[in-house]
Amino acid sequence: MSRCPPEVWDRIFDVATYVPYTLVPEIFEKASFIGAPYNDEYHPALRATRATKYNLVCVCKHWWYLATPYLYRTIYIDSPRSLLSLSNTLRSYAEGGGVMAHASRLGLWAQRLDVSIELAGHPNNLTYYPDDLADHLAEIIKYLPNLTIISIAFPSSLIYGPMPPTVPHSLRGCASLRVLDCEGSFSLPLQDLEELLMNSPHLRILNCHHLRWANGLLPSSTLSSLSTLGLREAVPGIDHTGETCSQETHVRVNEVIVHVTGRHLDQWSDFVQRYSRCLTSIQLRYDGNPELELDGYLDIYLDMIKQSCPSIRRLTIFLPSFEWLRVDIDGSSFPAIEYLGLRAAERHLPSYGHRRFIILFHRIATLKTQIPTLSVVQLVDHVNVEQVCEYYSDPSVRPHVDRVLNGMLRVQDHEGNPLSERLAATASTW
Image (cartoon, one colour):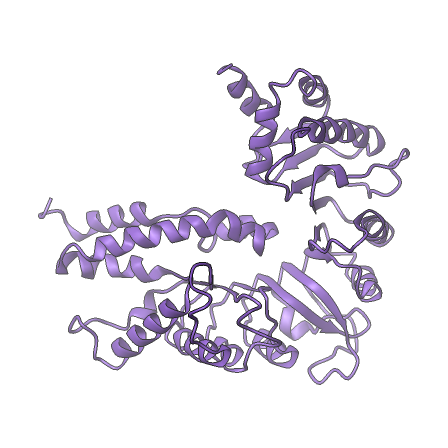
C-alpha cells in the first residue's frame, strides 16, 4: 500500500470524504431546498465526514500532504471555539508559520464553508461576543478566496439585529461564489448585501432574510445571474439608498422560495407580477409562527400565484402537517401546475397518525381530478417517505395510497423514484 502512486491515494481520499449534493455543480440539483431543509439533510453528513478527514491527515506526514486538500475542501464550523481555532490556523499558514514547513496556503483548497453555531451543551459558559465571532468569521473568509458555497447561521442568542459589516465586506473577495445562504437568525444590512451581490457576478442561488426593491423591480446588476431566490421577507423600497432600476431589465430568476409570513404581501404581489414571464417554479414555506392563520394566508398566496404567474409549472408547499393541505371543492385555489412537491415538518406523529396519510392521499386524488395538467406529485422529504412506508401496512391507509398509485398520476419519493417501488419493497418484508 505504501507504494501506491499519489493518484490512487487521491482517488481513495476523494471517495472516503465524498458527500453528494454538497459541491458545485451537484448542489444546483438541490436549489429548491436551500436553507433549513437542505441543512437538516446534509449537515449531519458534513459533520460525519469532518471526523473522517481529521483521521486521514493524522496517520502520517505523507498522508497529511495528500489528504489536507480534502480536509479543507468543505469546512464545517459548529462552535465558537472551532471558529477561533480555524481563524488562527489559516492566519498562521498564510503568514508562513504553519506546523508543516513549505505547506501552501490551506485556504486555497476550500470550496465550501458552513457556519452553523450550536450552543447545546455549553451555552452558559459562552465568553464570545457577536462582534468577536463576526471578526473571526470575516478573517476566515478572507483566507478562502475560492469559495463557491457559503452557508451561515448564528443562533438568535448570539446575534441581535444585523450582522456586523466585517462579514459582508470579506465576502466581496469571493469572486467565484455560486451559492449564498445567510437566512439564519441574523440579517445582512441591506446596503451591504446589495454591494456584495454586485460583486458576485456568478451567483446562482441566494437565500437571505430579506431583500429590498421598489415597484417590484430587482436591481438587475446585482441579480442578473441568479436562478433561485429564497426570501423570508420582501421589504418596501422606501428610502432605498442602494441601486434602483428605472426600467425592467433582464433577470434570470425562474424559481422563488416564499416564506408564508403574512407580511409585505403587496411587495410579493408586485414582484410576482413583474417577473411572472420567467417564474416557472414557486415554493411556499410556512415559517412556523403558531399565531399565523396558515389556512387563510395559504389561499391568499396560492391565489396570487394563480392570478399572476401563467408560466408556473412547479409548486412546492412546506406545511406543519399534511392536514394543512386544503383542497377546494372546485380546486380553484391551485394554478394549472404540472408538478406538486409536498413536505410536512411533523416528525413525531400522534397515535392517530394513520389519518394523516388517509387525508393526504385522498386530497392528492382530488387534486388530480381538479387540475388536469398535474402529472407528478413528490414527497420531497425522506422522513415523510419513511412515514408513508410505515403506515402503508395499515389496512385503513393502503386503499387510499393504492388508489392514487394506480391512477394516472406519478407519485415520487424524495429521490425522484416511483413511490410504488419503495412501498413494494416495504411490503415484501411483511
